Length: 212
Image 1 (cartoon, helix red, strand yellow):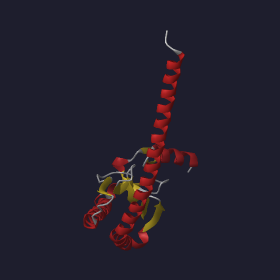
Image 2: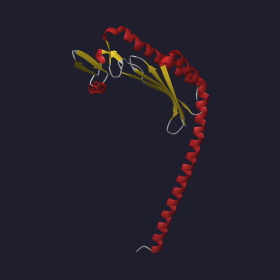
Image 3: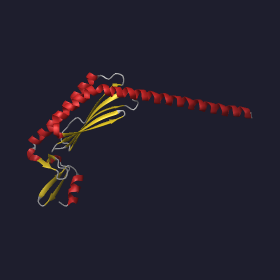
Image 4: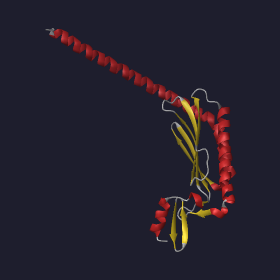
């Protein structure tokens, strides 16, 4: 039979090991929080460094489209975003440029996102580039941003070229007020001897409920 003192010694050893583990984990968490705060400071410095890259380029984009675009800037800790809403009779066009970081705050991530509804042509919807937090390359970032802006302009112009070449086949959703080729209609409705075309079943249902 084992001695009670041996049992108590084993219990105390487990308790001591647990306390040591908790203390170590607490120290690691404190260090991680401290390190993260330091990296967030570096991230904000990197964002400031990149301002000279993205601001003049995005301002040039806005200037090119003038009254046809609405810009919404978003600034939060660890994230900068510019959302560009383009007014077009053909589609709802939303372009976003985002500067952010990864989960561990070790990189600067630049992202490009383009949404066009309805979709009836192929285009690059998403692209991104990243740099180590301590090694942001302004020249590479500038070239990447230039390429994305030019790519967007090509897509925008192609969209409106399609309107010219397909003008005899273009229809307009009476709810969304968006023009598109007949062949990409998401739904149709026959009423009073006339065919109505819709970008989706949702706008068709809205039209029916309106009783027009």
